[in-house]
Length: 383
Ligand code: PLP
Image (cartoon, rainbow, N blue to C red; front, side, top):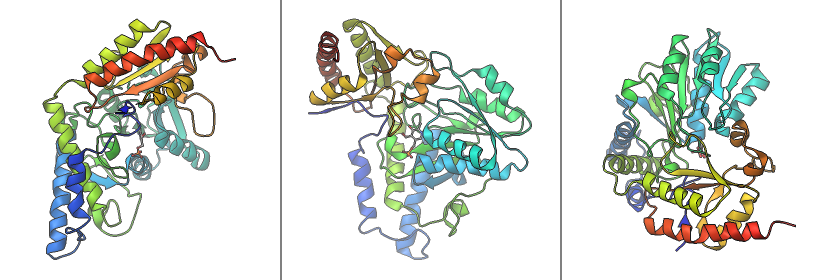
């Protein structure tokens, strides 16, 4: 059986999620806006999905969840909304290590609208320069947007404190929680986070569905205008099967977080410790004490990450480059470059990302294979 250790790229849709979705392709095909039984059944299913998401992230009242086509749309909606409602404020504070869903949009806004973007740096372990963040905030800041967890290293950011700081200057605060939601407990009630983005396919739900949490009372301007769906916050007939799937995925993730059967973090640590003990010349990257429990990014010196992945793939093990190259370029990722990982380690970084489905047996199998691959590649360096 192949072993899948690339859960930060996407996760397997849980069979219970698929089962929950299926009736909404067949018998329950109604439009939630219709004033007959077909419609009201579907409207009830959407309400249930919204409640499940509220439960997962500790959101208070129903209007706080807006369903979107995924994490990227939720993020674009949050950023553009904050700029639209904060008239006269033309600055955004973010980090150098955000996902392209944030950075590409902000680059575009900087180039086309002349907005001032403050991209705050990180240290060698990927930790945010908090003083620089505080200094960048000011009366012209419309929004601060900081990810909850980094997709490449799993490093967690202190978003609850960062949101408090943003509010001291009257800015809104958004967090990209695409990698964090469903993997670590989140309770927004006691925080001042105004907006949070998440995505179905990172938490064993379907692809092409996500949600934007919008704290009650947060001023809002929709990205997609059309019909009155989502209380006029996102026009367009709802993708009902996917929303139901996301709701079921949220319910399963919340149950797993409340009663974990076998801690993902223990398996990740067993894998990482095993690799570090058996292979010399390698270092785990990121903030080791504060990171997602499922992620290990390990830099192997003097080997190409591509070669490791190739051999792992031949052994039936799926992982990814620790330093995901931007598409079409061989440039190492902006995240590890921001962390100033030395070039000889940068090229040999691989990311192993587990899920609640990963088993101890799979970890042992990887430990049975990976050290031999590393020995082999070190013994036969590229010509
Ligand atoms: N933000 C982070 C941190 C991600 O890892 C991803 C996906 O890889 C996204 C945003 C984009 O989410 P989606 O694929 O649902 O558009």
